[in-house]
Length: 163
Picture 1: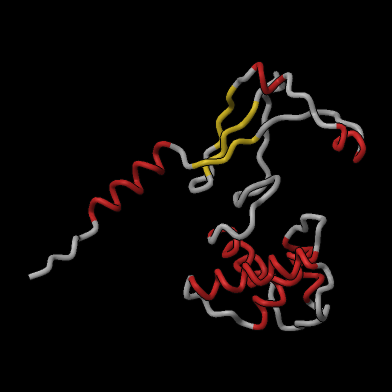
Picture 2: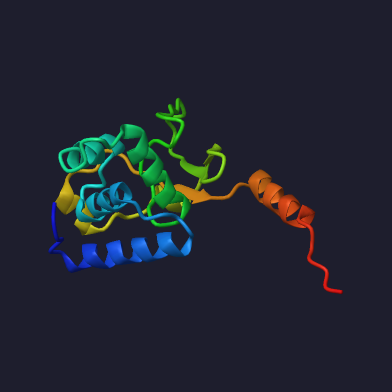
């Protein structure tokens, strides 16, 4: 791939490498090439697309390495996911208008209803991309159960006492 020419991609790559180093994560050649590929690809690539793109430059890279590297970016808040979550494709038989809450820690998915969101007007920019068949909102956060686990974990940590 070589040097990126898009200034925004360069900025994103700099941010990723700085944040990864600050987190104490080793910046390997394979990780750097995977980072380069994701920031340069504006099509929101899936793992296998990134794997196929970096493989010619890194013949020894494994699909598992690409997965782990992308989840590292996700866990550090440097990338978001679209569509199916870690557990794979999910199915929903509820065909009435509704939206989804997704816990970013445990993957919990719950329906919620919102008449204002049901009548959300999409911007013209969306219709310029293509026709709209359906739209729903996916809200991501930390569910109450995961938030409690974090609080309990923080409370159990021993405090440092000074003499």
